[in-house]
Amino acid sequence: MDTRTLGNGLEVSAIGLGCMGMSRGYGPPGSRSDMIAVIRSAVERGVTFFDTAEAYGDNEELVGEALAPFTGQVVIATKFGFAFDATGNIAGLNSRPENIRRVTDASLRRLGVESIDLLYQHRVDPQVPVEDVAGTVKELIQDGKVKHFGMSEASAEAIRRAHAVQPVTAVQSEYSIWWRAPESEVLPTCAELGIGFVPYSPLGKGFLTGSIGADTQFDRTDIRNAIPRFAADARAANQAVVDLLDTIAARKNATPGQIALAWLLAQQPWIVPIPAPAAWSASRRTSRQPMSSSPPTTYAKLMMPQRGSQCRARATPISCSG
Picture (cartoon, rainbow, N blue to C red):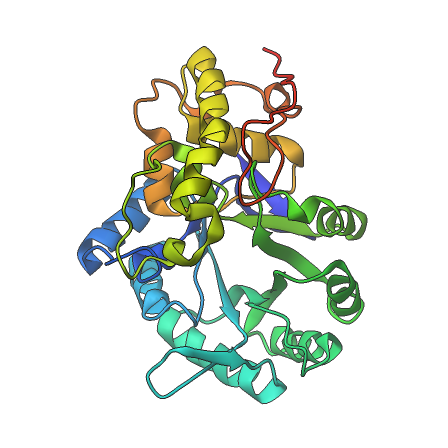
């Protein structure tokens, strides 16, 4: 797999793996042994970039165990920034310096590593100045516990303020061909400051793979039950997006998910999407050629229906050469 560089020198595979769904979020997770096998299979396919967080239950331990044989060959990103109640459920935000240090030490133990490759603030805490957060991570970098600093779902202003204290290597936010919010301010800020961008849910939480229809029923523990875009009427309206991807995929002997990922990769050379294993597997299904077989410029000008919870059927004209 090709590699890309995030920020000032963090080299990773062009596509990473978002590991949250292996532990929670999308219904009952698979067995631990199966999930370890999935992660190790990704390494065999050339993936070197893996994303986890303190907030993902036992996910850090799972990722750490799976990647233990590949120390020095892979990059692991994790996150701090939430408070938890006695049952382990998220109960607010906490980016106080003492909590950042505590979480970092705990993550090091759970991952079984000597240093965290990329440490994100999971969400900006309005009670703690981002300068204090960046300064704390700067100290952790100086102590050798962390190598790179990242932010997740941060505004352009917050990114600038933090970057002035400690250079931000990567910003993580939801971004896909049907969720374009970062394009207005965050992506231009990343371009200006030389910061990498890591889209989570690059396949629309599975929707852009074509494997989810208007009649799909989610497990009661699946977070998509609470997302407006996944209401039955929204899914029916948004099917126009998948149909458009499917039309292009048929011309490229690919899948809709592969086209969606190729579009992301074509936007900037410093964008590294992290699809979930299930979504990525669905995106690869039935394809007889690798996703990268067409040059990125093939997809750069692909335009999609108007953004929103329901895209309806109002697509702009497509420009898709090649």
